[in-house]
Length: 165
Image (cartoon, rainbow, N blue to C red; front, side, top):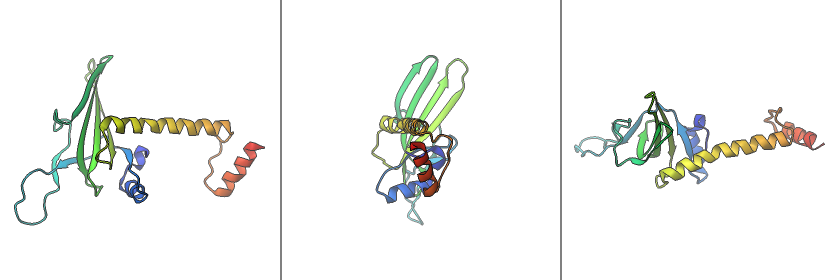
């Protein structure tokens, strides 16, 4: 799992080179495209990009869950889509939350390069990212390293020894 800021093609390529799959977050306004389903004209390169993926183009076939809790309607959609900055097809989960009282809408785009991964599993894995960050934060506080931002091996070793002292 990568932070949303690192959910880009360079991060995807680094992860896939190790034989793993990436789960990350895209910007809410990312331009995604459904795969082209039309025919081939017989000339030139085959079309790759179809209709742009928007809330309006998501169909009931893409809808995985729909729930209302405390005047907030949450819909989860899943689709395979292209992003022009990624060479591979992406497994995209779109989480849309609508406030039924105010009419405001919020959208979250999660993605993975594992096309077989279920949408609920992708959401659960991404939510674990925060638990991992909390564990790191707690460990830093326990060892007395919360004030030290070190990136060099010697500095990290010195402060680890200092905290044990």
